[in-house]
Image (cartoon, rainbow, N blue to C red; front, side, top):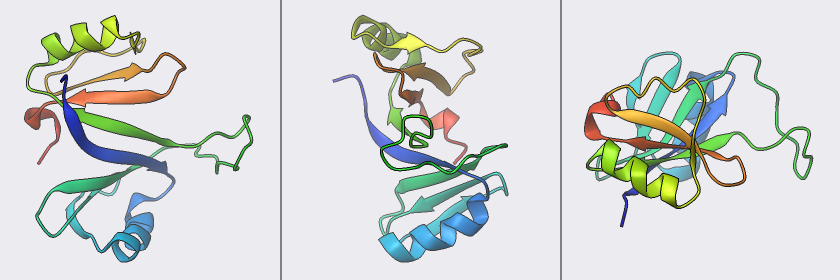
Length: 125
């Protein structure tokens, strides 16, 4: 095992506004809100959904490759270096421009979907 699902991150134009929808839809509550980023938690206090502001956001259109879906998965890991070696061996690619900060790193899967490896320090919680 490399890691465990930590949260699903949804890109959007206004995280604070969209958070209200997901709070009601999934019976979640706000754990953190910065204006550009909102984390929603379940009753156990576990982060489940995060919403992040994306400048120039374009609404996705179902089954339209020109306007694909906007979300990524955060995977909680114990050690970024160890997990990185494992995901690279599976065919992931470290995205260009990643500065490898302590706490998270951004990759893409073999067909280009982004995902992050995160440690507790990288969650900001």
